Length: 140
Image 1 (cartoon, one colour):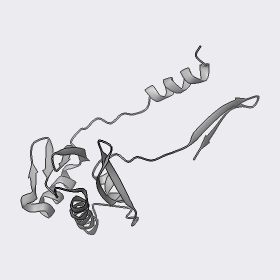
Image 2 (cartoon, rainbow, N blue to C red; image 1 turned 180 degrees about the vertical axis):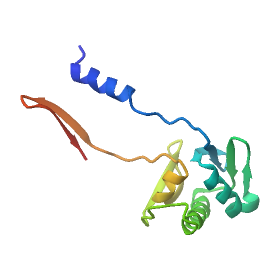
Image 3 (tube, rainbow, N blue to C red; image 1 turned 120 degrees about the horizontal axis):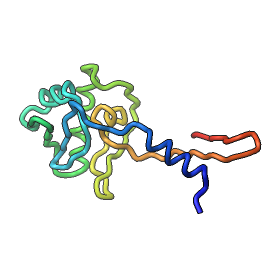
Image 4 (cartoon, helix red, strand yellow; image 1 turned 135 degrees about the vertical axis):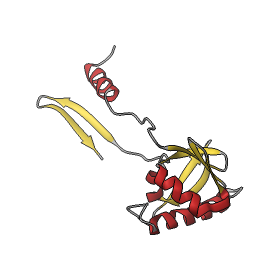
């Protein structure tokens, strides 16, 4: 039996915006699709990475390193360069790990995740209940 609140939540979620790449390029690092970048970020990464970058019509391919530690060092350097150019905002000095197939693929500055279109794995606790006063929502 389905609860009316569940139907309301599912209806709400169906109306939420979904990501549709318009002019973004698919970002690949070491042959793994990791995110999406705007053309200005792609141009900057090509300039920063030099021979380690290949831009195609709909994608950007970057070569960093063959292992996670080396890859993290290289990508962190790219993140610093983007930040220095004003293309990466809200620097936090907070390392964040990008997972791929259940393993650490790279670790870099959290602020780089949004600009590079990489998905973060975080826990957010939300709750709701119905009471005589109506529905109450708790968001953390």
